[in-house]
Amino acid sequence: MEQDFLLSLLIIIGIDLVLGADNAVVIAMACRNLPVIQRNKAIIFGTLLAIVIRILITLVAVYLLNVPFLQVIGGVFLLYIAFHLIVGKDDDSSKIKSHASLWKAVQTIVIADLLMGFDNVVAVAGAAQGHMLLVAIGLFISIPIIIWGSKMILVLLTKYPILIYVGGGLLAFTAGKMIVEDHKLQSLFVSHQTLAYSLPFVTTTFILLAGILYHQLFNLRTNKN
Image 1 (tube, helix red, strand yellow):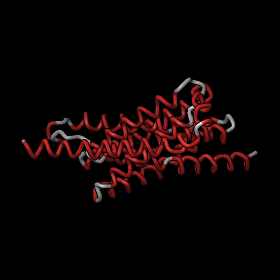
Image 2 (image 1 turned 90 degrees about the vertical axis):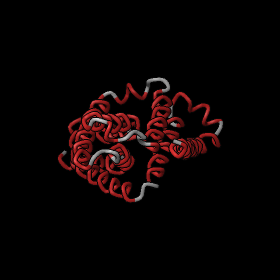
Image 3 (image 1 turned 180 degrees about the vertical axis):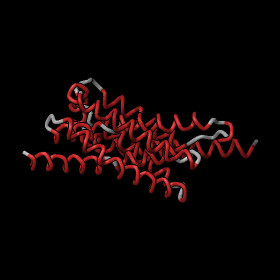
Image 4 (image 1 turned 180 degrees about the horizontal axis):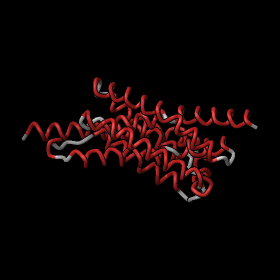
């Protein structure tokens, strides 16, 4: 029994780490505009809050998977988050209160984690086989590694701003996959395999082009002023 518990725990930790890679990108991108002092706070608060909420969601995973078009709604909203993270903020940071910026970063981390966490929730719920203690332990063991990963990505984003588009593209691709995997649309995508395969690439291209166009228009407007 103890060996089964440890094996399931290791599987859950592995799932959290593999499927948590995109979450590390979200955390890093959401915190990139914060002052250095506040970045660690946003990363820790956002990650802890997202993990706690994810545990609660796992408790009702079966019900959530039966909600009509939930994956579609989540995918569309995730596209909005991807675009928002790519374009960043254009306002002068000195005009924005620190605590408001911190809360906004934490809020973005939590919302994006919830939207992107469907695959994680399903996989973990299956591996845990009803043992929620396993879910909680696995997630909390994974926290330090996810936080460390987000800090490393944050350093890269600061040094190479072009990677912001890579992160936004990853979120957009995930959004497309979420829409394709919605069980209410399975009959459509089974009949149109090409559409199912291409949709994640379409959403990725759309968000990247929208981000590039936004930045070009913003720079043009700034140069005129």
